[in-house]
Image 1 (cartoon, rainbow, N blue to C red):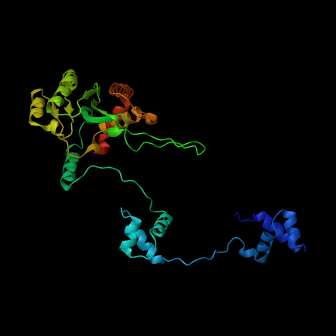
Image 2: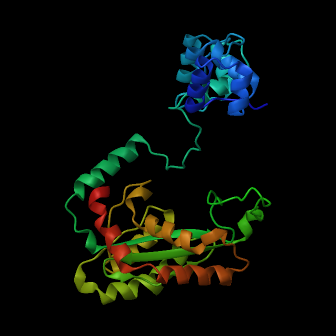
Image 3: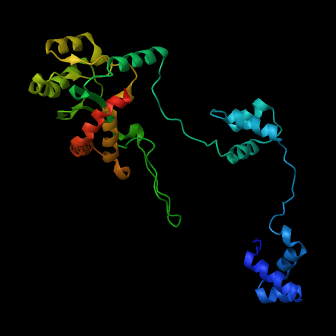
Length: 315
């Protein structure tokens, strides 16, 4: 049921007509308002619109509300767990309402992050100290990424017109299929993408390096470049290290669990957004590969240069 509310202008007219000696019913007729709302206003004009609605007293004290918020703050507890921990005689829904009324606490999904130990932190710090003055334009960055037919999770938002049916995203088992991509870039430009087997092992990794990296390295032999790779087992195996030594390719000592330091991760993000734009899905390996290569060629060298320049800030 709608509650009639008088505007400030209407309140003034009612007061003026009432002072002029008109009856409440006549005032209501002239304003086109109900007799009830005019009576309600004239009974106590000063309190009109400010009356507190009475109801059942709250089962929670201010202290209990503060305890609920402290328990919920940056925690993974459910409302029922908070109810149990604090031994409160209220429902889980009541606890949820208390949390929702707090402007400082919101429900969010946790972001994925690498597992970082104390040793990892120490090696990352040592890396930063050692490379604080490094010329990052001399580094050639590399990484692998798996692209699947259905795209990454989490990017499924759309503008829903409530007058139309909901849109749905159908995901296939194992995300439909996938391809593994190896990419490499530096201030001297990007290297041609290489699609590898489903699982990269030492010999398949060396095949990729011979096919893509070695010609690039020979072309820029006089530039004193350094190659960056992460610490995946095929990268740091004894055979791989001997191959780098044989071909006189200097390696950048890389701290474990540090994808945030590798600008190639930003390139992957740009590629993924372009490959899966508008929730695009693929139905064949050839189609997905073609889209990845096309997106790779649309990345401007200025983006690459800016990512290389960002290393000073990252370190």
